[in-house]
Image (tube, rainbow, N blue to C red; front, side):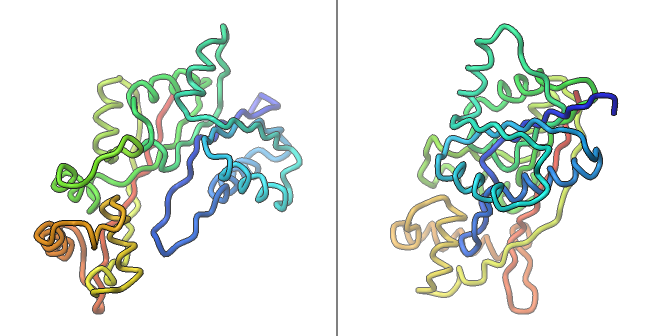
Length: 254
């Protein structure tokens, strides 16, 4: 690498974990940065973090403060959404170019996904990449959202978008990419135990509905419960119901 400086844009928020897991703010980002450091030892790295939540930024900063070997990394923090960042950057006469941009499980929270993809693609330097992760179009999420989204409460916070949707958008934009799937499952066995606290949280997570088990029409819950045990949604193994939680990693080229 000829340049003595690597510019790295980190798009947030980080991936939301299942209801029984802890959020790990910044861990994925720092893991990626460690790989970049190993590839380019001694090279200074400029990193910009965009995150609308002050709490998330604070936790990320705490993690950075107690992590060693970050001396050559400069962090710049922006408390704003990706669209706010985009609007602010567009007001500048000269846009900053980046060597690497990542969007880990964050495009669900973007209203204009094609516009966002087009903008950030325009920020890539020669030979640069964007790494995007989303739930796979072959996952149980895709089937769950397509069949039941119209029957569940809607909000403006989160979009039901999978890698299949994203690839269609990239194709229309004429942007080159490669897609890799990571097979993954999530144990949802507790969903089928009445009164199970973890099961109730899983229902809220799967349906994106607060207190789903106590507010949903019984026939709707029964239909979803039946479907979740079908092969197109889950597999049964050793007495457990494992939901197809597969992810896609999409690498976008400059």
